[in-house]
Image (cartoon, rainbow, N blue to C red; front, side, top):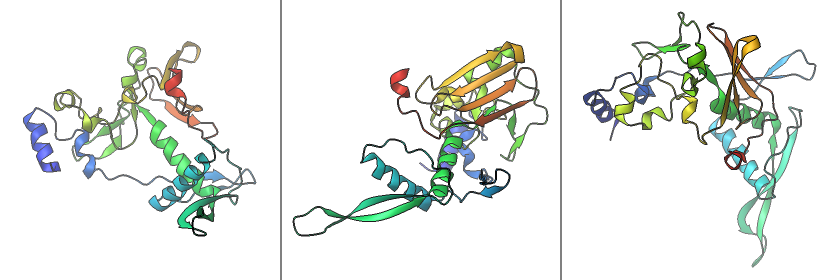
Length: 247
């Protein structure tokens, strides 16, 4: 079934033509990431996390897991190289073990992929902060005035700032109930596993605080009744693989 058929089906079922299913026409803006230089003042541009780079990082991760290492801390040196070996598939001698090929991975490449992975999983904005125009362009909502306390304590009020992955899989009847101008992104309430976010109200500071349990160290804050919001990540980059067993 092609995109045109899906669009006709959605429209016949009462869906809106600008819901998340048609984000193939959305023009995304490439993000740039920087790392702080050794002098503590200057910033250096991280390399792009291309498919080739991701493949190399995945190869290194698999090599580490084969040795029982789930996570290796960053060295903090952009020139540092992680040394590892991969099986070549050809035995070094007849009847022997496959030969191993020595390889290395530069830390900046690993860091670039790590930043992209965390950003994809955790980059969150409050509902209404961004809107979808009639031309399907995502733009900042100049009339956004913040979340109320009641709505701010619901996970449905926080959306992933990325191309939707969950909404296109929802039944047409569910998508038809969405407000096309503001509910076009994946809400964190659909994240797996359930319970991977902690949401609390901080009365003294009048803040709504959303924390990721999948990537401990990510925090999103939103001021009640104010357009002020933001987020930050302070952590090692480690993913909490034990989370499903902790819930």
